[in-house]
Amino acid sequence: MSSAAPAAGPPGKTLIAGVGNIFLGDDGFGVEAVRRLAEHPLPEGVEVVDAGVRGVHLAYQMLEGYHTVLLVDAAARDGAPGTVYLLDATTSSAPAAGATALDGHHMTPDTVLALLDTLSAGTDQRRPQRVLVVGCEPADVAEGIGLSAPVEAAVDEAVRLILRLVGADAPASDGADEPAAGAAEEPEHPAEEPAPVANGPGTSERNTTPC
Image 1: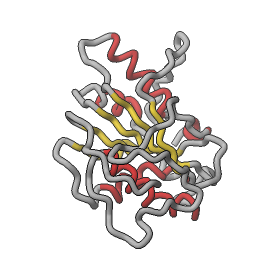
Image 2: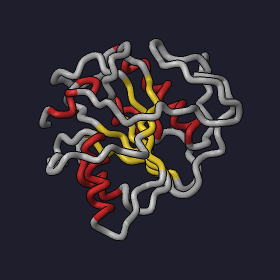
Image 3: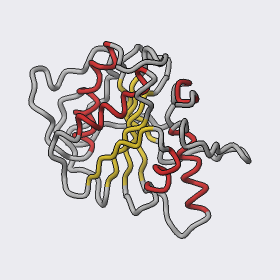
């Protein structure tokens, strides 16, 4: 990561949701990241939840007046295991008719966002003005509890990125400004937040495995 000063934080309410299945190896990345994030003081108006595999519940919760939502999840994008990504999923592509899978036990962030569009279109509730995904390239999503070594090493890097995005102080540690092994480099934006990749999350196939 760059050593630029933390951003002032997004206006309005912010939801940070850890997504994933802890019984599928590195798919538990998002859950572990928000667990560690909860150990740090956060600005007023920032809420952290362990969404796990409860995709339908998360989609409904995202319509509860949040300005910004950060989804934290494993994301397979053909990078090196442990690579941390910042993705902009504010504008999701329209799903094909009947393509939104209403199975809350193994919905991907992509299908959560598609369901979000469906719900917001059918109600008076508006989707968040901004949706970001903090993702990590998984190494192993086979059945089993525990993260692989590169993904475990990337958790603290993801926590520092999230703290910066919401305008909180990053935890003090040796090499806090250095990227974790395999972490994606971000462009320099002094006094601004890191610039996300302008496309939606590329979730890994492990999310399609029922828990």
